[in-house]
Amino acid sequence: MDHRTKGFTLIELLVAIAIFLVLITLAVPAFTRSIQSSKADTEMGDLQRAINFARLEAIDRGATLRLRPTAGGSVWTGELAVYDSTGTAANVLRVVPAMSSGATLTLTSGVTALDFNNLGGLAAPSTAVVISYTLGTQSRTLNVCLNGRIQLGGSCG
Image 1 (tube, rainbow, N blue to C red):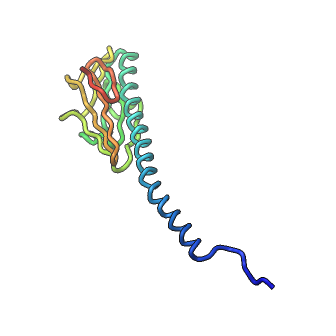
Image 2 (image 1 turned 120 degrees about the vertical axis):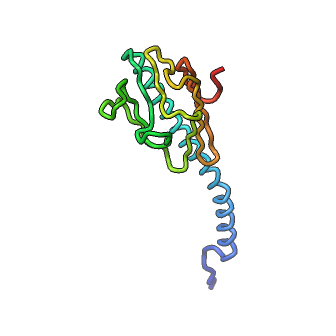
Image 3 (image 1 turned 45 degrees about the vertical axis):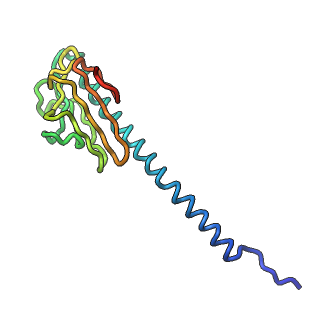
């Protein structure tokens, strides 16, 4: 009689687990970078759409519109809002959700709001605005030119 049992030996099992762990070790960092890249693209796209909305609404309404953090000051990673010309909380036209934790958003020094005039250009500040976004190893740059043009990367020059 043959008393052999079918299955894996301990060595075969350990080799399979070792190969699996090596593959996981290689895949996790790439997956994390992929998630960060996707999140960075999404958040910069949301910001770009909010800026463009404020610009186009200013043209459509023939009035100055403002995009600024709802908390005020320079906390641009928090919730943002587009206001009509009165700038009061009662006249919010659109709210942009806060960015993910760990993200940093840096604007040209001293910029607390973006105002667009009835022609779609920047009414305030009086210089082009550079917005730098960082999340982990991912970074993006958004430029708002004086004529109102919004560029992801590049420059206003």
